Amino acid sequence: MRTGAGNSFTFAEMYEQAHEVYMQRCLQLAKLAAGNVAPNPMVGAVLVYNGAVIAEGYHQKYGGPHAEVHCIAEALKNHPDKISASVLYVSLEPCAHFGKTPPCADLIIQHKIPKVVIGCRDSFEEVDGKGIAKLEAAGIKVIVGILEKEAIALNKAFLLFISMAVLMLL
Ligand SMILES: [Zn+2]
Image (cartoon, rainbow, N blue to C red; front, side, top):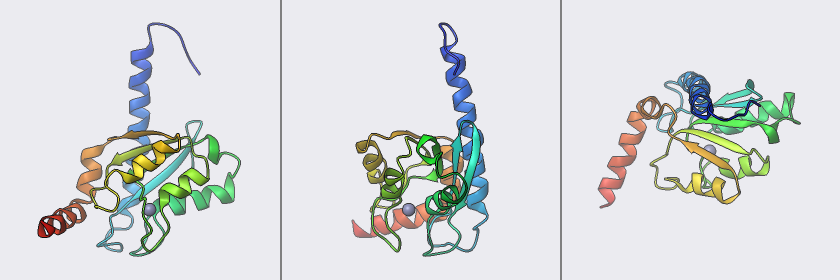
């Protein structure tokens, strides 16, 4: 780890760029599911240890395990000892509710992942910030809004569907 006075701005910028590189990979992974997960959102996730991607996952089919579940399962197979020292990148806010699968936020907390970087918040009313709040309450550092526009565009149809459902409730 590099430290020292005067270079903190550059250091922050460097971090920002790294976040974008890993988030880009999440978006690529998410797109692998095009056509298979609607009306669920397309989501990709990667786990990064010391700058290297040690596991990847995406939401493969409607009603199936979420991206985070696939990603953590892969890490458990190959690098179980590194999970609690890794950063999880995920294109959409992890869920906090019991749907067809248990909440991903709980899974992340259970595996003691210290930091989670999120593309965009999930406007689905069962999530809508609750996933982020749950992670933060467990002491996890959460960063939201990396490649946010791209992350939102990826699930425009899904997010539109949610907005319309909300409007109809009003
Ligand atoms: Zn989930």
